[in-house]
Length: 203
Image (cartoon, rainbow, N blue to C red):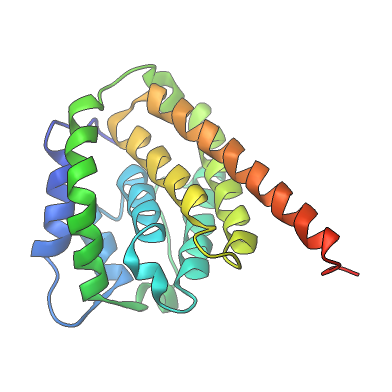
């Protein structure tokens, strides 16, 4: 994972628009654009999808969470390159949602491109890399119950997105920021579980 330069993130979103065509776009195509051998951009892409209009597709939120579990789990296990099952690679999204998400993200991408830089970069390398991956696993897991609540997956999705940005730029400060987002996700799940218990959903 190489450090980003001032135009990396904006350029990545531009490529998602420029290098896709037709009515639909497959997971494998998106992975080829971000770089299938790079965990940082791939995690960032998964976070982006989880908070983009693409998640209005039925089941998309859980598919992205499952893919995040698969990818980040491989980091925990020490895999050098991500592996994804063929069936998931062939899954297709509506390209219009991708374009809308990329357009909406362009503004904050410019902000991040200005502030991202290598800081506390040891937090993006082993053994801390595995810890970051475990936190992404946790964020993906809480997405499943939060997926039952409107806009519930947004917070864990943003957490995964920011983790990916931190890994891309080797920015440990951003990694720490994402960690606080994960704490917020767990607090939200705890409150929801308490609410469901009060309503007698589990009785």
